[in-house]
Length: 234
Length: 269
Ligand SMILES: Nc1ncnc2c1ncn2[C@@H]1O[C@H](COP(=O)(O)OP(=O)(O)O)[C@@H](O)[C@H]1O
Ligand SMILES: [Mg+2]
Image (cartoon, rainbow over all chains, first blue to last red; front, side):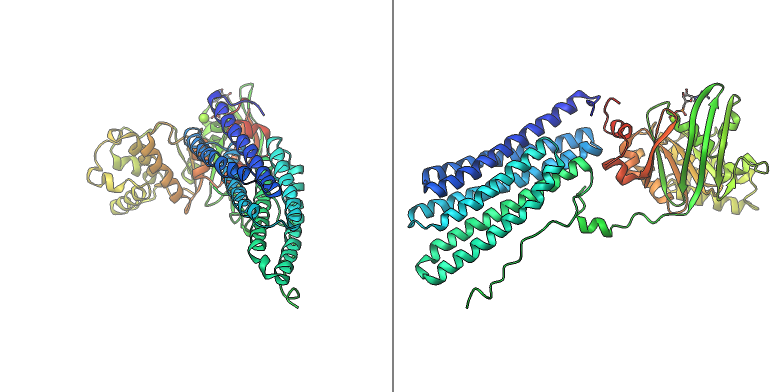
């Protein structure tokens, strides 16, 4: 694709792209640190995540401002328009991923003070899968790789399945030992946050597809089985 | 502008395919040896605004003028191919170009009212085509055309004032009133807003949207935003060739041809 006749337009688009790249990198780091804080029972690290999330909020506002300005000044069309619309949505999605990572870190602080349970390993495994998905979707975004975006989008079902099995596992523990309820629900909140991050990741995958192809990604994404709670109780 | 969700995309109905008002097939236009239009085929639907866009000199005006045989008046201009209005060949032997231009009206780039009163500007066409039997009928035609052109309220008290004394935007609406006074079926507009300010442009665009209910409108515009705002179909011309034609909404979010893409996003082709 050639450069714009108005070269300032190219500079503005590049600035937005750079900010989104920074947001993506930061969101990845926050998630990875939050998981590490849970795994290593490290409240200091968790505290860092909570602090660093503010930068992500600020970047989102900057992307908003820049994008609105470019839309008003340049009246973008076709792929430029799609890029900018997606920029707004991706930055707000990354901001939410940051919030969820922060939430995981908060739960991590609680867990670091509770007794050690081996369930944390399943959470960390689910967290690693989620992080891989996020990394790959960000790669797909920067390299405009729709095949990779579609692969990420399809693979979200694995996270849904991990979530479902973790849910059953934690529920079983809590039923066996009511003293586990406080701790178990913290674990469930973390798992739910990871599952939501997975959903946000597939949303980014859809946006990558839209930017490049100009049309929405289809509707046949495999989804995890809905949780059946009966059967657990007998 | 939002992204369509997949299920909406499926149920989204394309603008119902309006009846075709005009069809052009393999049209070529030469100015002497200059081959200005190269084998263009395009459909002009009824009750629809069709926009012609493309860089200067790509042949938009030339092609538009084929649609009501305005090119007949240019001495070294030769048109070949077939253009039909309601299925009838407009270059056919038994077609009177003057009658044709009453059915296919035109509004030009620069407002060009005749040096006559506002009333006479609008009454001109109906008079030469004998559309009114009495003065009262003519008055009615003039009022109706000025009302449709969204000008009546502004000029009803000064119909005898010269048309050239109006503001630019009012003059252009007067020209639109003049064009629709002969009850045309198709209205051709060649960059009708290029000499107008923002407000006058917005008024004309509003008017074009209303005219669509009754006419088939074809507008040449150099403003991509204007084409996106007023039209339902867009044709992109490049070097005398019709590169791409389709739904306006798709054309401006996801054009298929690289040349269209480069042009509408303002890139070097
Ligand atoms: N009256 C004319 N005599 C000779 N050549 C003309 C005439 N009008 C237009 N042309 C040529 O035809 C080509 C298309 O012009 P035109 O239809 O005016 O393009 P557009 O409206 O897209 O700017 C250009 O090369 C132009 O120089
Ligand atoms: Mg022209």
